[in-house]
Image (cartoon, rainbow, N blue to C red; front, side, top):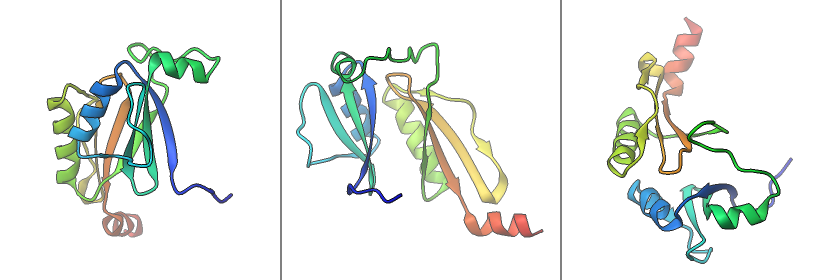
Length: 143
């Protein structure tokens, strides 16, 4: 299947779009200038072809007939991002915590091939930040 749009969008309900926007731009992500910035939502680019729409809960509820998940009790999904280095993993997670997020587990160090750590954003969504050295992973697999 081929995607027809220039990017994919993940829609997340948030309690306060302005606070969430400040959180994600504080992590270094940029707002998508193609989407209007308003009090109900913000489009944050988290990759070349991926954006997260931060949508106020009350407005989000008009987009679905289903009840949204209480993120204090349940995990609906984990958003996993790949970054270029172990240091970048630590930087993003530590910055998220400094901006009001919470740690999600301890870092997982799988030697030279993989490093993983995560945080919980202001609205309880789980984020996994990963570094994978494909050369090291292939060498480990070939041993």
